[in-house]
Length: 225
Length: 75
Image 1 (cartoon, rainbow over the protein chains, first blue to last red):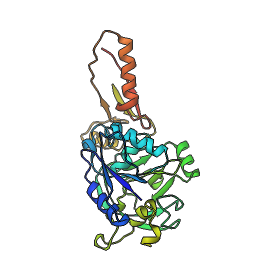
Image 2 (spheres, helix red, strand yellow):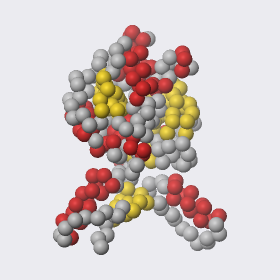
Image 3 (cartoon, rainbow over the protein chains, first blue to last red):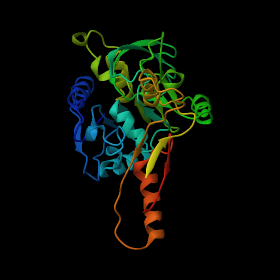
Image 4 (cartoon, one colour):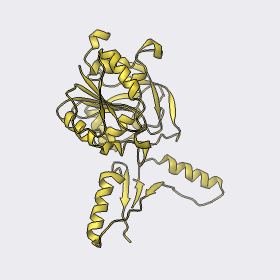
């Protein structure tokens, strides 16, 4: 499985993401700069975390309007898997590729800690390494992760199984509506999540709970199980 | 252009400001909502076109219409 990591000015989690993808898939991802209008043939495109464009205007707002996003939108339309983590999630929401909005944390503070995540939907291309209802550990580090959708959209997300992760056991770090930590699009090939699974993939990280997301998306579940 | 959060969307920054105004001793302060103001200079004399362009700018970039409203005033 081939993967690509998108790079934009201000993103700073790209190196962690490249390391995680390389370790789990056995091959280094291609890197794609923001001005590129075509993306090579890959199975998974990852938009990593950070502070693209200094979080100016709204987190992810400027990045979402860069040329590379049109190319990603086209690939997603063809069924290529797209994963956005943290700022990557904010960018996907701003680009209109995922529903809802990510607002300032209700505490108004930047949170950097470990949370618990419930795998709400384990029948996705990103979560099949887990079981439904399984609770995993995962680090978070963000200032604007407070997910919001209106009530109609919330019920449709629930009905369509688009809520993939929820903060569990009272660990919601940001006031996110309905404890939502990760959502996917209706077609199930675009996932956005605030927590950083790339930072919990091996013993040196203190655990490998996040590994299953990449193993699922890269189709190497059996190899890493 | 003024961009503000829609009613019903929690505004933690507005709430914090509301609390701070109260602790400064201002009484009778109701709801506080924080927003953004954009001053944009547009070339040309065609007011209708300018207004249409500004509306487009709000829809495409300046406001996130999932959570925000915008208002345009032309001088």
